Length: 237
Image (cartoon, rainbow, N blue to C red; front, side):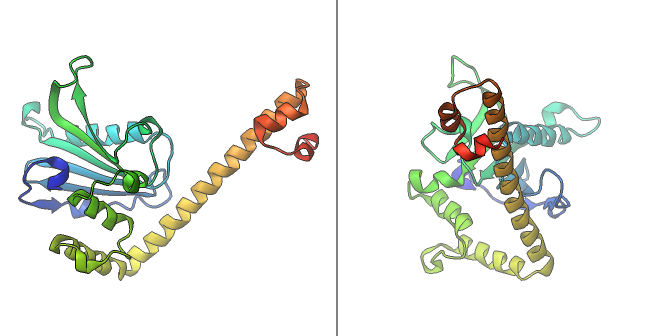
């Protein structure tokens, strides 16, 4: 955590009531959501998103804003609200960030022209795109932790430091829990189902486009190049 925040971390307290399974069939299944308090002064939301629904930027901003507003206690001044950060891990590359050649990015409120001036640091977002790790690894401590997340089962524990060894022990304890295994199985099924739905939707869209082009008497070779469908598939529409 120090290597992300660039400041000493004396303690992290997990809010155990906020390790969320989200009842498994709403639109947030596939996200691991953990709330923590860092140094008794920073509220932290840690998210893991494994399914790309093309709206993760707005979602993480919503969670962060909600966490900040909840930190303003009734009858208290908003100035007393804790700093809030969101740490988002994605198992996919985010399209808007495709030209950024590093796997971790930090986002805050800056002036458009004077980009070195931050309006306020009370809300920050850190995004870690796991598929970019191998391309942009710099072999620092953060790399070690992120690689542990990606391939904890294959990591050589003789070459890591004590905090990661402890994390491995905790992970093994969790994996022995029957309820956690059940959740893991359901999450895996959800991911497979979502990927299948995305493929189905894409195929349906190609078919609809081909139908419209065919109705407009567009040359069949152009329809083939546009949609990727075969001549036989187009003729049968």
